[in-house]
Amino acid sequence: MQSLVRQFAGTAYCQLPNEDCRLHTVAAPRKYSNLSLNMHRILLSTKILLRIGLLLATTHIICSTQAQDSLKTRTFRSIDLLPAISYSPETSLTLGVIGIKYLDLSPGNHSVPLSNLRFLAVYTLKRQIILESGWELFTRENRWRFTGEAFYHRFPDRNYGLGNTASALVVEYDQSGKPDTLNYLNFNSDRIKFSPVMLRKLSKNLYLGLQYDLEYLYNVKTTSERYDLINQEALTIADMAVDGTRSGIGIQLLFDTRDYPLNPIKGSLVAFNNINYLDFLGSDFKFNSFSLDARHYINTYKNQTLALRIYGSANLTNDEIPMRALSRVGGDDLIRGYFRGTYQDQHMASFEMEYRLPFWKEGIQAPFRQFWKRLGVVGFVGGAQVFNRASEIRPEEFNLGVGAGLRILFNPKSRVNLRIDYALGLSKGSDGIDLRQNGLYFRLGESF
Image 1 (tube, one colour):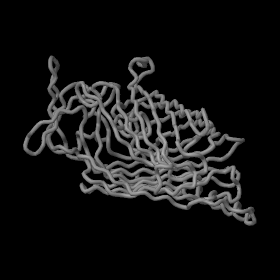
Image 2: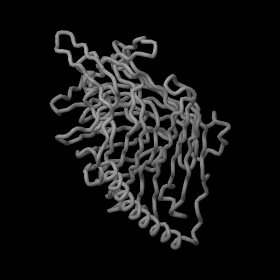
Image 3: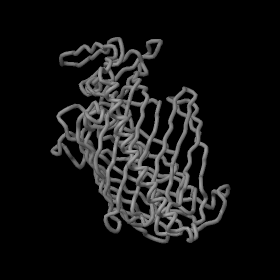
Image 4: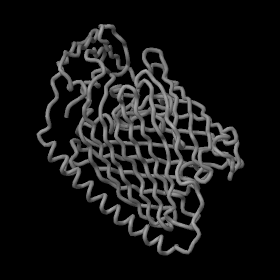
């Protein structure tokens, strides 16, 4: 499997004080001889899973409709749309649309949440693309649940190497030869992901089912044609697999008592996931992935909520694991304030706490243009640590992030908010020597 550094013709230099200096010669990309066979296996397994899922979904949707023709359907707005406009040096001007489509697959049954299809389409002036879709489908009596995500990204990314310190030193040179010292290596890539989950109700609030995970990352290219890997931590960037295909199948066990899936006031969620990535499914990597996501929502006063979360993940293998499959800290949904992957390794332990204070009342009828009548605020704190062995865990080495945000109620029926968060990563050195990261997030729906 190719690592990021081995993608390009040229030379990357290493300068290690008081140590042997390793010279990294960058080879041209290696062609996979089994690429066609892998893609055939992936397509075949995907088709089988899709047919099973569509057959079950169609059967239960038809049954639900036939059984409840005479029942009064719920009234709700069928779709919410919002423009997505932003700017950053990496992307230039970003234009797009974000939205949610609502479906009632259990007409007349108010105990079953509305199903939803979420989507995001973005294009930047630097010809970067994000196309995302996520779904939560709830059939009659909540007997079946279909969730998942699918997306295509052509977007800039960073490789911080392995470890819980983000202490790699990388020097990138622009076209004029001007150096820039960073703690990561910039690169671009194309990325395709498809991850459906199909769950069957076992008893009240308890579900068990199958899931499939496919990710294909290709066209990997460093932003800078010339760069130097300065220290030992930076060498993990050279040795890390980045491109390729991972394809796995596994199970999910879910306990869910949340009252509103997209923005709970009260309830709990506990999800255990296990996915086994195997070569007969077309995967270039063989490993076993586990995760546990436990959330609890406390209705403290009126419609205010204290949201708590503990999340852990582990990858078991004797082989290499691609960068995107590692346990990774950061992003808009896990420890805000850090770029996703600032800290990454085999395993992770994390916690988050958020207090949500809506100023609006439940059932508000104010139109969205009167957004000041739909406002709310939140405050949050979280921390995470990545590690290779459990013996490495230290309470004082959790990387903390804090922040606050504004909420604008987007849909009173589903309680979906427009989320605008600003977060600060408290770990010194996360953005280079003695520097801290921060992030501004603009999304529909809560982070957890």
